[in-house]
Image (tube, rainbow, N blue to C red; front, side):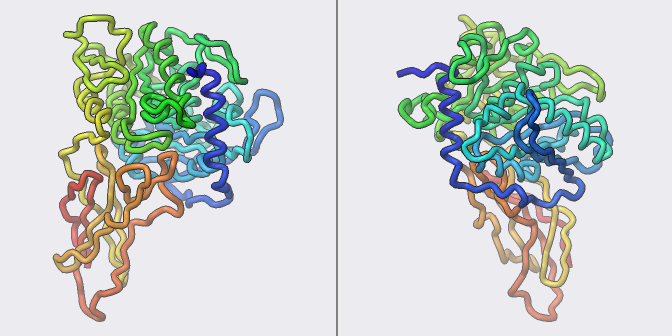
Length: 450
């Protein structure tokens, strides 16, 4: 039986809560938030229309950026476990690389949703989360010395209920949203009545101009229709058809390997957001978002694997998914086949390598295309450790920071540190660090530390 979009969304929120209920959420355990990280927390409100749950917001400000150009939001999904996972989102080196490239801050909310509580009370932005989000940007702007945070555009990524939230922000604040990636969750439009306790949104002309990508897993109703997440695809399909039929800049990238977990989607999501940010961010902090260019649009069937340039396509373009340019179309065709998005460029060499006694520390920038799988440690020109072999990710490619269900690093955070327990006592050694991305490409060695 085909579920309505509203019913599917309601069922999804219940399933997410059940799926993650066993993971307790001690919200008093946080990663440190010393600069360049900043954090603000708000208590729950009992006033009508205000956010009924407490929430933490952690933001990362890229080093050396005088004026922030935008905010990239990494929004977790429903349930206690997913809410807890939001505490580490701003510390993700791969997402930081995207923010750094565009002079943006990286923000990760963590809603303190109680066990069995209704996640619609935060993932529908009209229930107080939109206003609390804007409040946090003003407060974090004051704390960090970047008051422009309250005015700049947003690029939104959301998983499950977070996808519902990100899509809802597109529909309610289209003038502020540069682009939105909706992983396994979409809001409800007026195409259906607001059944299942979920209120429908109104689709406006302004929202149709915001680039949106729907990203369900194939086992969420595309190829596996009787799974516990089988209602995700009908909801995505309805949302896509309603927006695209009216000319919306929306596409669909079906993850060919996954169910509700995030899998390898970041390798497509970051590339897509990179293209949208490059095209849309204004030249100055108070400027308006630029319209997406129309000269290199590509089109693709939403459950297909081949895209073609719109200029040579014959047929109704409003029945096909929208892709912004040829580069992203190529990545999309690779992703929807096996998630193996091509990357031929190695990561940057680690920097600021310091040796204190037998402890080696360093800093590293993640490879924008493929993130970081780990590091090789050299002593006196010989490899003594390969930290990539310790990387874990039950949902996709191994990552040095590991990966939780909602696409965030595991806690406690994995430090950029190595202790040499086998160094010869009293001897003077020279150490170098080499970064490895998730497709196995190695950086040049770092400068030596002695």
